[in-house]
View 1: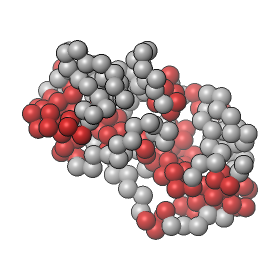
View 2: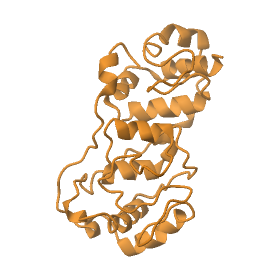
View 3: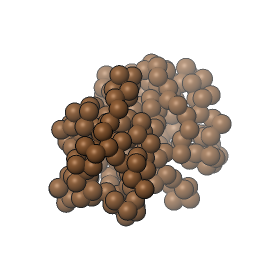
View 4: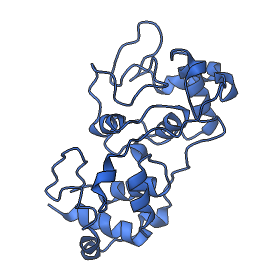
Length: 235
């Protein structure tokens, strides 16, 4: 999106900072093992872990998103990985809190773990199964993902598709109006609410893409709603 196509390929590294923190400083792995009950129908971890509906989670800290060659990831996560996204505490925390807000086309159907402490405990548990966890860079435990609940009054805004079409030229300089996905995701026919949630995830810096954060940050709530109405209606 925007007239700076060259910067769309900017490398997305996590907002990590090096620290020697142990898992216990940001969560209780014993409680996290119980929190993993929410995950184990789709994921496995530990000795002999294999892919299920979702990939195994051994070594997830410090792993590039979409990096397990024998697992078919959603296009969004695979693309984020190709652009350099590496899972650290903060990015995993954001994803688990609201998977769909973090990556619209994720196949992960889980609605999200809203309790901050429960997520911290879960990540402490999972981090035990990453190689040399004390040496893996991560955001400090005090840094957590933005609370990304989009206010009902924002979701209720009825966008003007004609105004959205007027605004759309910056979007379609990168996203193809044909709906084709050629390295940049297609946005034609998106449900309006999904579009609004995604744009506010960038606006609130929940999704880690500097260019999209900048573009979304320029838009008002009404402009986002208008774009959402236009792209939903395009056939």
